[in-house]
Length: 341
Image 1 (cartoon, rainbow, N blue to C red):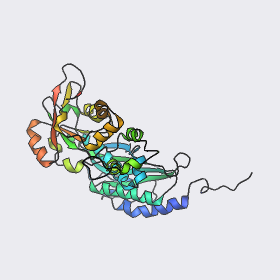
Image 2: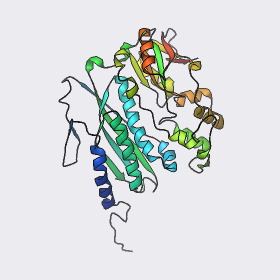
Image 3: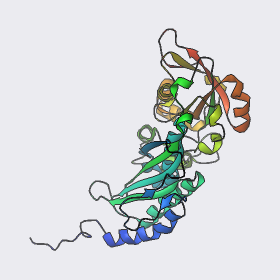
């Protein structure tokens, strides 16, 4: 049977896509630094580095919000995901001592939803403005058949810059250095596949409205809490810092060894902080071992700073919610690089 096909009938509405993009222009422009060069053709974002040192090092990173989108979207907290993706990228730049310059997003939908797109982009723009980062490009794709009608994905790309003399390297960390932790704002953007499996959230979201012990927000709101951004807290302290670890997937065990050499180990004092209730709730309901929890989640520690003991008092005073979480030791037995005791 012959049918009259067009792109819209196949699931891609170009006219709607163009309308949405035109509405995004002012939001995106509100993030532009002076270094952004206006580019009428729109094929590539332009950013001048003329105001920086000639030997400056560019640092780049990319990530997605992962399956957190499956939860946040179900409770209509789309804007939070825009904040999530920017803050995750910012936090992946600062371990090298870099400051963000510009950001590009990639949003993919099964069916384009203007309200959702606007919410996400507003979240991205607000988070970018907070750290003086420009949105200079992006892509909003409609992929029917790849995603379900209500499904979408949020991905981000960020470029930052650092003076090579201020680049933070593993060689900076030494025996006797102190580890200082900054708290997370929950799960951040990791471990949501395990949460979805434990609570069968793809089929039943009723538990998301349940309150958990000692928390004002319900379970869903706690899960959707945006990924905390740490640059604002520590940007004046880079000169005192030997190492910075963003605690993402794999927790302390996987992320801390990335920032020091193999002859050292980090000894973490588990009793130096109270594990947030959301992690206890997941552990109890899923019958998950404490070791597995520490292998998957940040467990309340979103960032770890390594510094010389002489700097501890200054850092703690500048970051009032931080605490001493451990110290660096020689790894004499060549065992685990991270010991939590």
